[in-house]
View 1: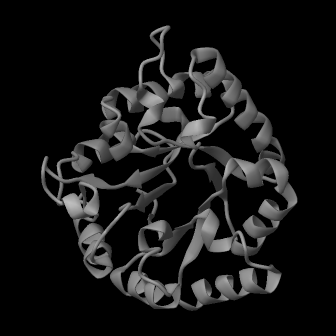
View 2 (view 1 turned 90 degrees about the vertical axis):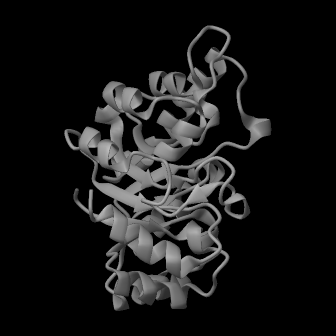
View 3 (view 1 turned 180 degrees about the vertical axis):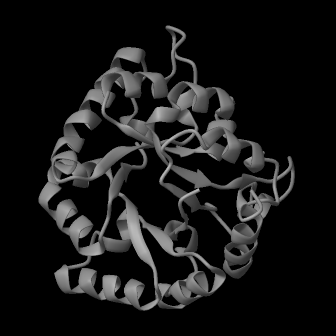
Length: 253
């Protein structure tokens, strides 16, 4: 494994980030992943201040999430954010339910849309791809899945594989890794609590304290060009616990 990062979205409810960054550094993380609300409203001085704060804690931000609207409509702005913060890879993270296609042709077209949206970022030397949730694995009328169609429509798209969402989408992550491992450049490392547990945390768990076979998954991912493993929890109720327990567990894989 090349690195272990932390998706800052996990700490959005534990502000300010000026208190989170030292915790991450002390626990042994060296990378963080950004998300839209973190930097979308910052001017250039604000972006530089964020970069300086990360630098001061020995943290880098090689990857970041950007919504499709910014990618398409504020391309120069997104490039400025990426350059200032030192990003190497950009992932489009989500599509709102009312924007999601309903058939294979629509998802294929969305893949083409992502392919086109990513061109200026690839031209700038950045990796560009899609980050999945669970809805991409629902079977469509023709027997395919949205995830397959996105990749078919976007042949140059990388994949930030959120394994726990693959599982929640009732798909087999090992099969998807076998089929699309060459696309995977980043992996979200999150865990799922046993059924009925951690309901106050939306059923998620700290890494190594749930049901996901991370030891087996890390082994399955080793043959591929995964550059970033990124701890995430969508709704933790104890950020210190999440930070420390997750990196401790992942270090045993």
